[in-house]
Image 1: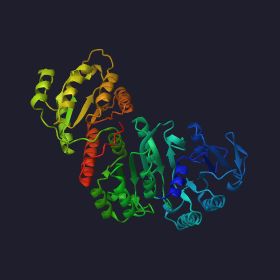
Image 2: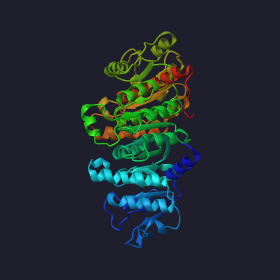
Image 3: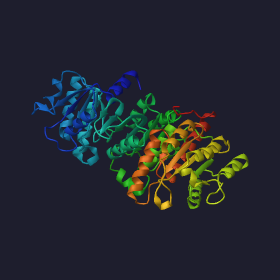
Image 4: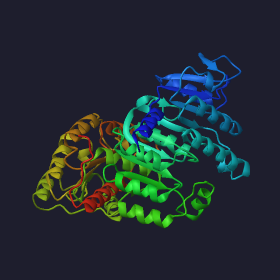
Length: 486
């Protein structure tokens, strides 16, 4: 990407001025008024111009009859008009000198009708005529907490270092919520719909040099040029991990995705290319978010050997089964580590083995620290899972003092010694447990200690980061780069 194109993209994601074309006086759902209200909620600091030939003022802002009447060339134009008017609006943008356009409007090729196809071809012609960067059509567009360009999505939200690129409006919206409540935040997100002009590879090239982005996630139905995408992804994945959820892997999904006009027929290229370059594949938005959180906050593991500290013999067996299924190892404790754990863990009601079943660790942070000190020091253990429990009378536990902050303080001091994650399971359909577990997970996540709602999610994320660093190390023939921002 050349310097001029990069600067244009900078203005797209961090506009100093923008115009919303098609803002009515009355609020009617997903329209220009919706975007305007969200910009105001987000305290967008830039200049906002409204285009409406009928009214003179909307929500305290003056309106203009057309783009030509605007007092400046805006950084971003947002089109919320019916599909049949979009082409003429783009022509006005070209005449005014506006380069970046986001088209919310649907009614184009996704309808698979002659009229829709013709209207989308008109968009392409206008873009070529004026060198327009067009996001969409049929999409929610960019979302950037740092510049407070939040036309939709989670508001308020803190900036982060995870970028998310998606053809799905709904999944992009959900990811902004995951990123906010799981504590890792969004650097830049974009829902780009039909990708008539700008496709996923264009955003990927821009993010490759974006200093605010360290990990990039995708939800893709397809790409216009699979070979170009894979070439860019191969180079980028070595320094910025890519996490991909690609639709169309089952017969049912493929039938749905077939309605997308950009669907790629090069599935074998996809599969072989992604496998060779070590791009992380996921199958759900939750798995995407959990994996991103691990990549952003954990140091590279040296191997696949796990130490698990929790409580309950049945849980311990279940934990071991899940980990082994994902290719992680649960080695028995040996030597000095076994001796120290045996001395710490009483013989009755607990087991000095891996996983370590020690109920006392739930409510005694000093006891927990002694066990984890041993695990952190053992060079034959590569990663740690700490199981936490929401205290309740069901387990016959006495009145207790919440030790979550003490646990966080200890883990923050030690988290870069080796990867450590927390599991706080609030399942069981008990609304109290679910709420308390969610709060506890957020406390850990905000402290940059990944916390998960179940062991399968935690181990899946750990398995993904182990595989990623193994692939990168193998491709380079050198030690992995530490992506953690210590």
